[in-house]
Image (cartoon, rainbow, N blue to C red; front, side, top):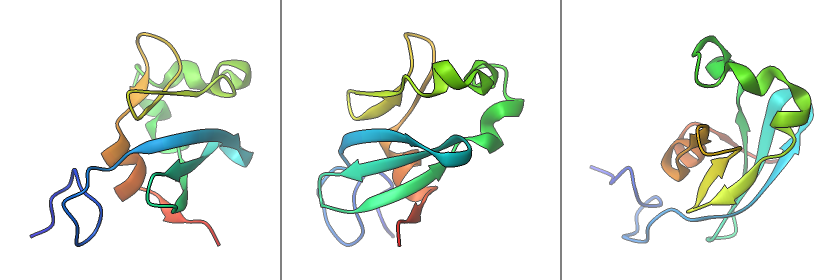
Length: 90
C-alpha cells in the first residue's frame, strides 16, 4: 500500500516547490521530484473555507507555505492533496 504522504514507490515526502495560477481556477504545481501537475480548485468552492477563492484576485495570489498551496492564514491545500488529486501536465 502506498504512503499518501510520499511519492509513488518511494519513501520521499511530497514537497511542493512552486505554484502558479493557471486558467479556469486551476493551479500549476511543481514538485521536488520534477513532476508538474494541474490541480483544479473549482470542486472545493462549495466548501465555505474555499469559497473566497472565487475572487480571482485572491486566487491569483497563491504561494507556497510549508509545501502547501496557501492564500492567507485561513486557506491552504496540503501537498498530498495537490499531488494525488491532480493530473500530470502534458
